[in-house]
Length: 295
Image (tube, rainbow, N blue to C red; front, side, top):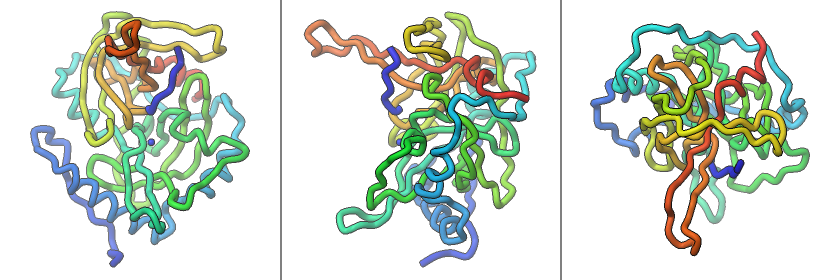
């Protein structure tokens, strides 16, 4: 069942504060959001963040499912990391996709977490879900008065505008895009691993609504194919937790290598549709990423 859910006065220089990679530190989410908002305003004032219409005008003509040339590295087999080590590494590698809202008569200006993304090379080629950018691919789409743009931030609050969308596939629920790294911030890419079997240990770090940089662990519950829906409809079900805002988050193995990408959830209720019994977490296996890239 391929049920999508998500799972979304100006300063002269950017404010940069390190929150981060010490994962024992107790972070203030509101302080972090305020920092991102200030930096986003600065980058927008300097013309470094494209608006919705500008992004749409470029993305609407992309040929879907077209493999694109992307540099990436395969995961090297080495000593397995502890879960603490995996979490610290992922904090460096995971980005938040934010939505910026304009001030209108009914709404105040602000930002909100939209989804998750991660880089697969140091140049800033990113991966997220197709459904995160879905409106940008439609020939006719509607923009609301309060809609402004999407942009990214890293764990330190540095802001990155979306440069271009390279490719996407709706069945695989994947999109490849690049960011503008105008300040030369060091980007720490994920390496790409192999498909994971049922029972394999996996880890996720994503940005569920209101809880940025949420780390969870679990196992691969099963691997399934939905041939009736066409190509690239393989899904890897896992038990690691995630929710709205986690779209596009990486699923990695004990070596820190990418084995999947967060996509959707499917809730199972009792026959009376009253009691929630379990939530199946459906992710995209890494093989689907390989299918839309060439080296």
